[in-house]
Image 1 (cartoon, rainbow, N blue to C red):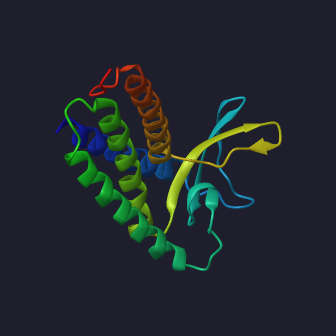
Image 2 (cartoon, rainbow, N blue to C red; image 1 turned 60 degrees about the horizontal axis):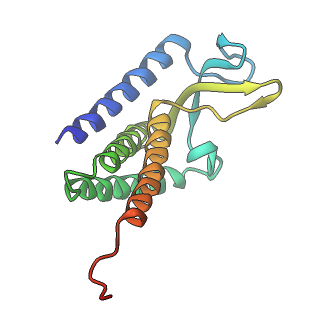
Amino acid sequence: MIYFVITAVVVVLDQISKRSMSQWLGLCEPGACEVVDVLPVFQLVVVHNSGAAFSFLADAGGWQRWFLTTVSLVVSIVIAVWMTRLKASEKLLALSLSLILGGAIGNLFDRAFQGYVVDFLLFYWDDWYFPAFNVADSAVSVGAALMILDVLLSSRRDSEQPSGGEAS
């Protein structure tokens, strides 16, 4: 199935980009942070996130590593099984799930083997900074947006179809 190939591509791109950025810039620590300004609102910087999205649970003391690893593993299995049960016509849903699965697996590898996720894309405006993220996070976000679009398009198609089986 082509959608599992997309998942694999996301995982590979995510892992290569994280490794490359870590080797190029090293870890950003207080007082010693190598930053590459790409645009006036965008930087490349390597940070380690031991929590979940937006560093939620990052200071939880260590238990979150295995909790989040387990949750990611279970969700990844559920999504993979779901993908095998999709109809051939459910292309947008399959694409969204493949992106979400690729992102989940990419971050799962980091969390399981390193205890943290490597983030390196940082957007900001003036003194406001959006939490750093990575390719896997981007894939999950795009996949979630495509899933919402699929739901909206599906509900529109369903409302436009005449209801059948009603007697006049």
